[in-house]
Amino acid sequence: MKAITQYASGSTFKEVSGTVLKTVKVCLPASDVVERFTNTVDSIFKRLNVLEQENQHLTQLRDWLLPMLKNGQVTVA
Image (cartoon, rainbow, N blue to C red; front, side, top):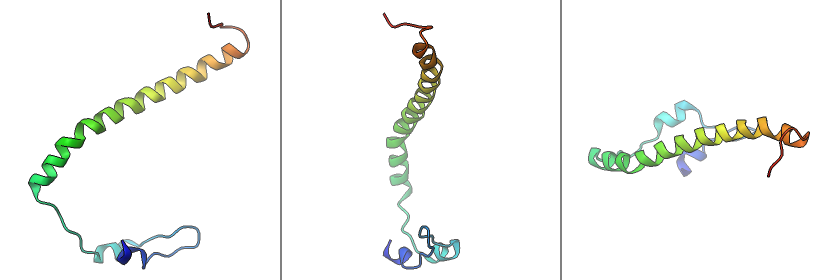
């Protein structure tokens, strides 16, 4: 990170150019490590997607119900 951030520039936020990033050397893990990692996090990302969709649906439901609750069209028993 130190090698990358020293080349960052910008007044609003620091930015690193693609040219600079192309010069940075990285270590790639062995394919079995990548496969094990993928198998481990795959279910987590699937669950995350389901929860995001659920949250979006609940937000829409809230936005639809809230005005009706406020003006008395709907009551909570």
